[in-house]
Structures are given as structure tokens and as C-alpha cells.
Image (cartoon, rainbow, N blue to C red; front, side):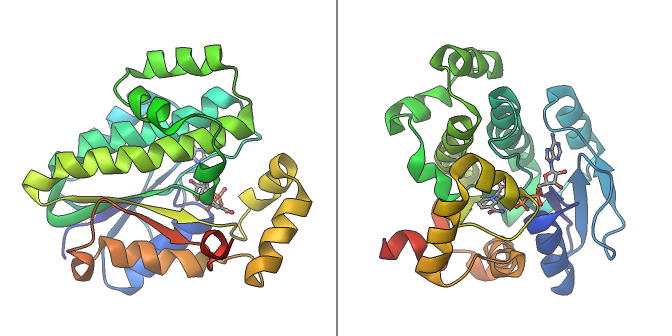
Length: 250
Ligand code: NAI
């Protein structure tokens, strides 16, 4: 593939590792992040605040006409205000996905990074799914009325993101664009400390005991890079757990 792949959240953790995995496979990478930097070998990084829909539209406008794919990795943990969590983890992913499906080449893919946190969401699956039909402002209005705290908003955002990927997969099918999600278990990145705060260090330790350790960014990034690649051409509209077996064995 000669077209570049966009990676969001490229300044840190899984996004940074994904950019490195793609670059190692010879895929040109355009990064974006709140912070306007990325790993050393990625020099094309566009600063963008994903809480701001206008900034997202500006990012979309600044990208090349065609892309080889998109890795939506940027995310904020439940220590952030619920509105910020939903804006970045869900609404930004939706806006980017909808804006970029028409710009991804046939055979390319969009991969959203969700989480095993999706399984803890307090929102019934049907309700989460129905929210995807609402405008941003109405989703945020629902969030406020529902009174979810940051952690619940995080879990909900990931649940809805998995549903969004399937919805967008249907939209991408006619033009040969696949849309998937990847759900990591706990991964050693700066966000992990926030998860220890919101979910309790005990639960995180218990999860690590089940599968032997926490995940590392290089456990997850190659899976994202594979799903974006031509070799994954018949894999579509699914959520791929990358959790060392945590959910399955439980
Ligand atoms: P990280 O904190 O290392 O990286 C997140 C990146 O997103 C940062 O570079 C940050 O600047 C960027 N970002 C945050 N707010 C932004 C905004 N408003 N606009 C633009 N960029 C923004 O975290 P990590 O672990 O690499 O997380 C990546 C994704 O993986 C997130 O979606 C997270 O929810 C998900 N995840 C992480 C797990 C973990 O245990 N680390 C487990 C499951 C999912």
C-alpha cells in the first residue's frame, strides 16, 4: 500500500507503537494527537484536539485525498470529565470514521481501539446502539441526564464504539472499506495509572494475575497493523480482543 495510514493518539502508548509497527512494515504514516509530536521515525504529525468537532473537520481537510487506512487510537480515561471521555472516545471516532470512509482506498480499513471495559458498561446494549443515531449534542444531553460518572462514561464509550465500528462497516462495505475494533485488556501505558485510580489497583492486579502480566503496547500494535493490512482483507465488522485471554478464560 502506498497511501498513508492516519494514526490518532500517536504521541503516546498504543498509538505510538502502532505508528512504529506500520512504519516498520513500510507503510507511510500520518500521525495526529493533542500533542503535536509522535515517535522518532514519524515526522508527519498534525496537532488536533479531538474534543473539538471543528478541529476534527480541519484535520480531515488537511489530510491527503486518499488514505490507506485509519487507526483511531486516541482515548481518555475515566478520570477525565464524562463529557470529555465521550467526546474523544466516541464522538471524535464517529466524526473521523464518517468523514474518512469515503477517503480510504478499496481494501483499506479503519480500526477503532475500544477496550474490554465495554463489558462493564452500565448502559443496555440496545440503548447504546440507539444513541449512535443521535447528533453529538443529543448524545451529550443524554449523557448528562443519565448522570454517568467518568468511569461509567468510559465503559459506555467503548461499548458504543464497538457498535459504531459495525455500523460503519456496513457503510464501508460497498466501497471495499473494512471497519473493525480492537479491544485490549490492561496495557502498560501512561493511562494505566488512571485505570488503577478509577477501577481500583486490586482489580487491575487481579486481571494481571489471570493472564500472568499486563499487556504491552507491542502486544497490541501489530494486531492493529495486521487488521489494516491487505492480509486481513476477509476480516471485517468484528471486535478483536487483545487481552491475553482475560475475558475468554473468565
Ligand atoms: P495514552 O495515554 O498513552 O495515549 C493516549 C493518547 O491520546 C495520548 O497521546 C493523548 O495525547 C491522546 N489524546 C488524549 N486526548 C486527546 C484529544 N482531546 N485530542 C487528541 N488526542 C488526545 O493511552 P493508551 O493506553 O495508549 O490508550 C490508547 C487507546 O487504548 C485509548 O483509546 C484507550 O482507551 C485504549 N485502551 C487502553 C488500555 C490500557 O490499559 N492502556 C486498555 C484498553 C484500551
